[in-house]
Length: 125
Image (cartoon, rainbow, N blue to C red):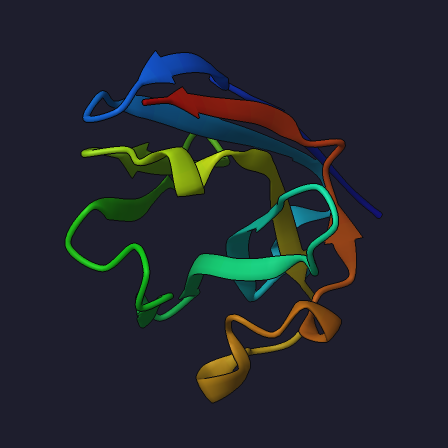
């Protein structure tokens, strides 16, 4: 089992920045892909950014150039740096881990086996 705990959410004005963190514990050696997802009220959960163990990355078109995913393997922590935030970025953000190499499916939520509880991000105009 893998446990994931997100932190770093909050309320910011449009154009601001936030850095989300996801601390992983448990059998992290069995995870090959990690990602960030978000879900706004009344909408489907969508992939935002993801990274495979080999360093391959994927970003949703809506966040390219604004968000950066990274990981610190020594700290077992995944990060999401979010810059130039927009009101449409408002959502609950979730960290997720997969027991498989994700490849082209990095932003597909059904690829993931473990989920955190989420951290709220609210961007006001």
